[in-house]
Image 1: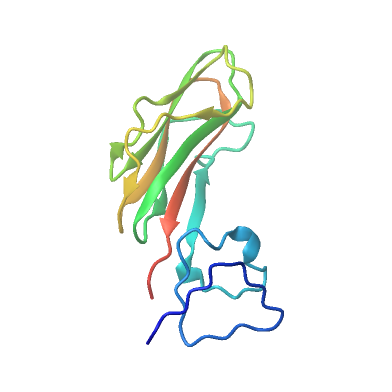
Image 2: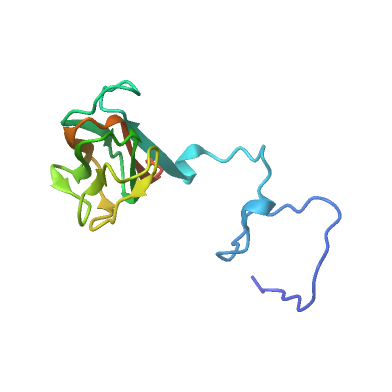
Length: 163
């Protein structure tokens, strides 16, 4: 079949129907997709924020603990790791880590001391970001002292799993 090329802009006031259509990458952006577009979830990328308070109440003294927070379903990447303490306390230090299959994904743990302000969010420096199906992410805390109200979370970009 011969290809017809139109070198000028074209405005179509009615519906445009085609048996097939190839749209160049980058042509359609978020603004062109309506809220009711009914795009299947398996065609999207998902951002997960998996976190834990390490079974500590907001005023409870933090203790050392590790918890599984996420199991990867398909190809994914770690976007960020964050931690905070509601109260950094008056003695000791606290260190947070994020692990992929028992190996740290941070170049160094996220550390807090009594000189840090309460409820300050600190970001980890990632040394590993790639994830595959069935990888297990855990968050850990190691605490000496009277800091209270720990919370940590990992942000994961995950491609939708094909059905």
